[in-house]
Length: 239
Image 1 (cartoon, rainbow, N blue to C red):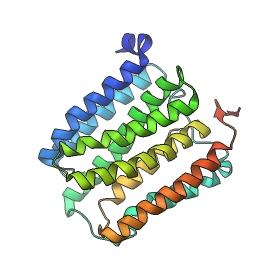
Image 2: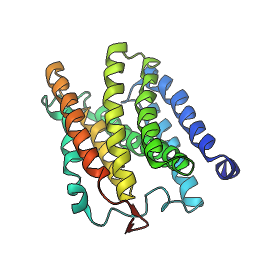
Image 3: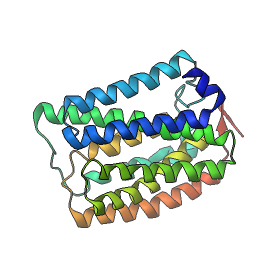
Image 4: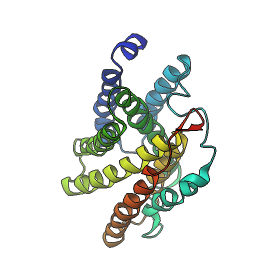
């Protein structure tokens, strides 16, 4: 794995993403988020990623070493935190009960970590070594959104998947810009986990969901524009 990473970092990232999609789509389709099998599969991916990063001392490269020091520059990430609560705007209605809900919550937390590491970690860092920052940001964000098409393989409706892809593309730009400008992946992991966990507690009202998507597009676009005007932090310094 180390040899592939050193020689073909982009291929390394793409193979990780492919493996994740091929494994998790059928697991989700057959067992669902509340299944111990779903949680176990995510634990395996999370442990594998963490072991690789830790054993090769890549925490700093992937933005895991520290929280951004000057959060005021990023408006304390308030636009991102507010949008991350969107799944709760239509009321409170847990998807499961008891232990099943707990398993689903833990699974969603792991999804936040694994997907951020795959897309904003492995893929983005591989792209930005060869491409301009703008190209890397666009490709990473679009790939993240398009990656949700695998939900079709899990039995999800095509319209729901299409809406989810648009929503994911917008969030892809927000999260990638936060990582690029702050140098830290930790806020992205937290925001991603919040979105996914809150989806287990929302009432899922179509009209409110449409308002949430619209607000995410508008506010997210303005926030990304604001972030684009900031200096980029690298290794704790602004550049």
